[in-house]
Image (cartoon, rainbow, N blue to C red; front, side, top):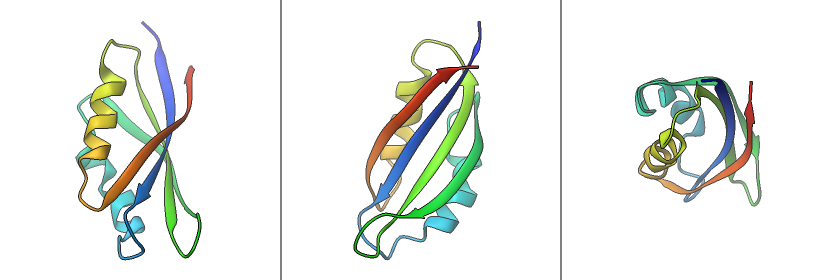
Length: 88
């Protein structure tokens, strides 16, 4: 079994969402076995910012779906987009 690195864009509903605070809470939010690796808040559009975050996890069945579900369930988050998945 290998390791997977997956990068997501986490988009807020509006500009009132504190993306830096969200970035700092990621270790508490994600499922067991998933580790935040790199996170950066980037400008998106019309004053919105997006959290671009890479997670490391074991290549096990269903872990990506669990992670996406956890990210989508965060209050104030409008959408989650997977931008890259690779074996490491």
